[in-house]
Image 1 (cartoon, helix red, strand yellow):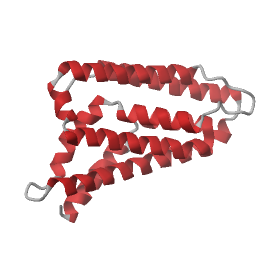
Image 2 (cartoon, one colour):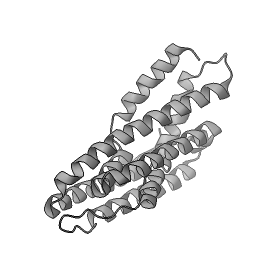
Image 3 (spheres, rainbow, N blue to C red):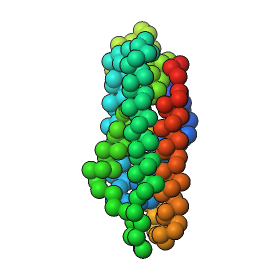
Amino acid sequence: MTIETWIAFVAATAVMLAIPGPTILLVIGQSLGGGSRAAAPLVAGVALGDLTAMTLSLAGLGALLAASATLFTVLKFAGAAYLVWLGIRMWRAPVADGAAPPVTVRRAFHDAYVVTALNPKSIAFFVAFVPLFVEAGAPFLPQAMVLVATFVSLAALNAGLYALLAARLSGAVARPAVRRAFNRTGGALLVGAGVATAAMRRA
């Protein structure tokens, strides 16, 4: 792989990651609720989720999803249901005076991982996107490892920036009424993302 190809992959990935999706909505919502202590497990969950999705894509699951309508539908509705459940949970999160709803390290990591990894559109996208930057005349595995490591690193950096920004704002939204509004807005967006996921069709 040439340096020019790698730079092009970095640029394309950065543009794609700049558009907030369900994962980033979750990161922002939980960082507002849990502050800076939630940032590290959220970023770790996003990184591992993307690593899982890309590895499965390159291992052939993306092609299988593209070929099997039943498998794609099952995974799609599982991901959609989880997003809707997270949205309802965020909407209903209790808000106390001067206190943020508790977000445990385990819960933050688990939610970020599942939302990131359980996305059939991402898996199908990876299997179509990554090969565009693989040089046919060179060994596949070393190139795939570089591309996966690059994507996961950029995704973790992107999630980390959103998490830290939201964590810094968590003190500014400490008032129960403001925090409740944030929770309900974020919850509604996650439910909307779940509905959109359920409605999407295979490319």
